[in-house]
Image (cartoon, rainbow, N blue to C red; front, side, top):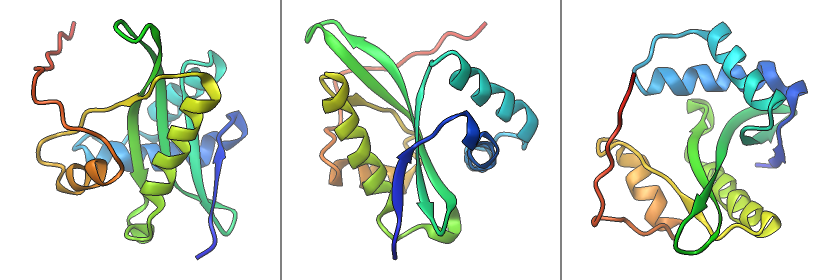
Length: 148
């Protein structure tokens, strides 16, 4: 299988939004392609995230989205690996690993100290994938959310 991983731009909005909508559905959200598209467009226009696409036969079949953070002990930039999704028809081909590897390379390119992520405890695939890709499980911290 021949694939390419490349950085997304505003020109990729439609394809990226379709994958993003499927990703949100995977996490039990209502389908809302237009709102997701608006959300991604804002990220592109304001340079608020970095998105990489997995491309097969000139079609985006997966993506990863990173947000910039800063690590207080390392005193460096860090990237939050917020979203990772492969279209169901293309899973099991190693594309997630390749997208993660591209994120690691992005850390080198941007002088970042590393990646951080969180996933649901019920995400069996992700919870097997991330350690395989060199991520260490952090059982020392609790993550809390406050929503308005």
